[in-house]
View (cartoon, rainbow, N blue to C red):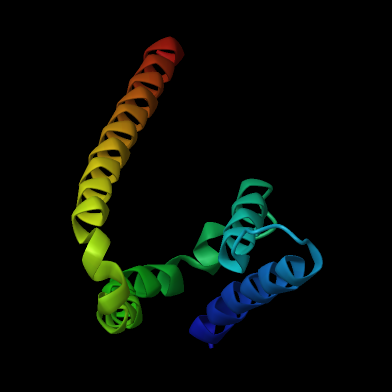
Length: 122
């Protein structure tokens, strides 16, 4: 029953994101609205992490399966992408490097800030 409650919370927030997407005429995916809602719910403790942790972990574990439809979509669109595939690969490599660098710097800053806080408490 615990998993059903966790799935219900996640699906409810996802549905709320879909509703907001249908109301607000911005080119933002509904899933982004759902993620922002979940972030606020977790931050303001409307939803406790323990109430979605196990189901969220399961969804992260099966995430690679979620990319299969996108990969198949790329295969079916190959004739359209064939003329620009080198550009796509270069952009993909560059953005991956940029995301990795920014993520690494952000994590380093957070760890450094956390260490500073721990030193101040002692």
